[in-house]
Length: 259
Image (cartoon, rainbow, N blue to C red):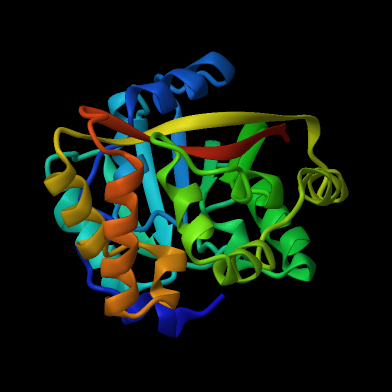
């Protein structure tokens, strides 16, 4: 995992939105959160740490490799006294053994090479108590290459700049690979589902274009220069004309696994 990459990102990068209610409902449909101790590994700006707390988690500990992003998360979560943060990695979280009922790893594993997955999952298993649940959310290669449309804005990125497809898919793991390494780490009752998560609703094209151009946590869009970003925003405007209000959705795969 590239610590330099994360430490050069502004601390507010992953604090600008909240988890959608649709995400909370999917988690509630599969995991009891209320009254549980949760760990959010790769917590970024604390968006999903807040979501877990809002769903009734007794305590949430966010873990991230970047001290810069942790500073943003601490500020973002200042109103939640049951959310704490600490420095750690996917393979070495610095969390206590057998003390978490839930471990969430959202948008984390695509930063890991395949030969790093098993150690990541073994570490999650260590911090979970008996019958604890590991939740992994990330994109598979299949999630990445879905055609863009007026809701799936991310897909339009690849329609306009197809050279981004290889850069994105080469860092993704298949659903079968993730499940295989979960089994190797000793998890059971592994279930994978696909899910369209509402990212944000835009009231106008001005709002949408402004968000694309200024998108800080833009991941694959870091591969584009500013001229290309503005070109992308203009092309998206042509695709979504008169479609407002518009809810942007992103396709993910979520794995649930029991210790």
